[in-house]
Image 1 (tube, rainbow, N blue to C red):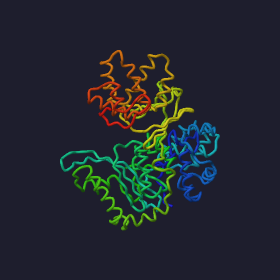
Image 2 (cartoon, rainbow, N blue to C red):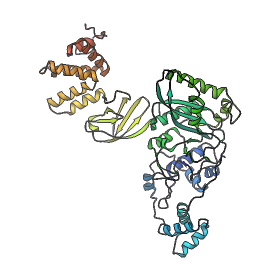
Image 3 (cartoon, rainbow, N blue to C red):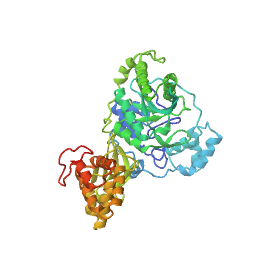
Image 4 (spheres, rainbow, N blue to C red):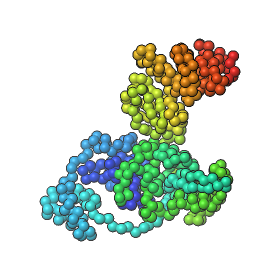
Length: 504
């Protein structure tokens, strides 16, 4: 089995930090490291092979093998649950050991143990050796290039480049590139941003295009998957959205640093290769032409042109890759990112510049927003709501049952009156313009008309009402009667399908 990147230069899940640092005070194997062990065992590797790949003892691997599958990534909560955290007996001797190895870097660990015992150290060698690993100066490592095996590694990264089109228009193009290390089969997707959501959704799309998930997904830059890391490259805090997605999809990840050549094996920087082989070699009329040429180029490099490194066409070697790939645990449409939220005092949840209604009883509760590709599900206590995802910035997605419940929860005629008007305003900018005209033309009678408009909103929904408002503004008829005629509304329901702008 090919040696994985080492913790001294790169990081694999669980090799550091608050959610993963090896601390003498709390020697818990991090949950994402446990997840990695479970994935490798599930893929058919022996306990000895998993031990070598993860730098864990066979005994630890054996213990993890009989544990329940990892279902969360909160190491702190798990540490409290397992009551891990007894102070290390070696901690008071940190200064002595640090000074000792600074003066004599090549001193054997057993000799350090002997001298520390002479200073009164009462513990065993395990705690002292753990301390020694932390304080001993690291030796420089010689770079090494290695070849992956079928289905073992895939490589992923974001990239961006400024393109000048044929009409001299300039545009920054962002893309996400993935490649299977063994076959060199590559896929590139243009993206609008480099957020964690774009990363995990495009990553899953690429896994599906590969035909499955390899043993390990390698990322060239930590900023795409991690929030913080130490000077030696050890990840100290993973992006929580990325970490949860790894659990949902069923993959493990490692991070390579640009300055660590021994991690990449025989595969070059994928972003540099895509830029040099495609973007910098071609000219494009516009964005649509770029997309078309990108598809043609991917077909050429995957299906027609032998790879210089292997001498074979990637599609031919892809058969060997796919024989070892594992299916994702979820589909692209079923993948939900988990985001902690708070239901506001107006029983709304704000996310990404848009509001989503909840039952009034949920006001003030903490909850979880499940972010799907095209919809949003919010759970707060015993309350749940499902909304369409996309809308104009600043708009509110309000379900009809929530409108009625909010009105029932408001005391007093004045409060109900203005809540109805606010809910009509949420239809869109055309509603704002329509109601502005209505209120100023009829300062005393707008309340009755808003009541009628609210009934139409509850019965027909926001989109038909928004179209009717636009028709009213165009015709200069800003009153509820015109809107009702446009919608074919008689107070009981629509009388039929009326043509917009043509009242009956």
